[in-house]
Image (cartoon, rainbow, N blue to C red; front, side, top):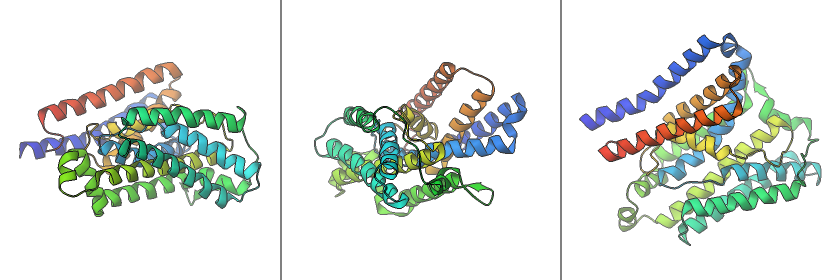
Length: 317
């Protein structure tokens, strides 16, 4: 009974933090609550939210994916190159880029599941490889000059709602469906909770890991497409450091870094907190370096709280 109550408090606390943070920035700067700024926040967090779904799956099994940022960068460059240099249609360029992102995620899954490389090493290696590949392909210069219709993905609206927010909402809904309504989702929790017990119960642990990293690559690629459309220019460093913010969103949302516990609904709150925190600090003229310090502290606090929960046995109760 006590554990149940503590977990309920834990799940609700993240939303309380979100409300308090929103009120604090609203009181500090009138521009924060303007319609234009709120729409800006919504578009900004959409990219974090989309990639966070894939990262949630990875962290649920006790893994990590440091390649997210480089996948986003590579997708930016590849999609732009295909449209501008090779005259691919928008749809063909998007599909090809997403297939590439999924393939990279599959490569990470193969190294982690089959070769048994530590996830942090495998994904760090692919981060470096594909970050370099993106730079080589772009020649270190931005690629631009897309069909104006491509802007709709990152800059368009359906009524008053930005298209990127709609894409993020659909992505979160798909992620929640996978975790709550499919046996694959139950496998994610099982493998993260106890890998050996999962294997003995008949779950194909390696296949689960492979699929999860492939999904992480796909969602990172989708975030890359949205980013490219929003900026309307492929930068060779577009996703650099992006994985840090995505991991912070997920861990802040209560997904246990040791695996086996977490909810998509709380990841939504974690994503909004990072978006509000970033935007609020910009409005208050906080330097980029100080923003890095603040975000680092937030990540430490989130992981520290998770570690305390795990130590006390509450996180997976």
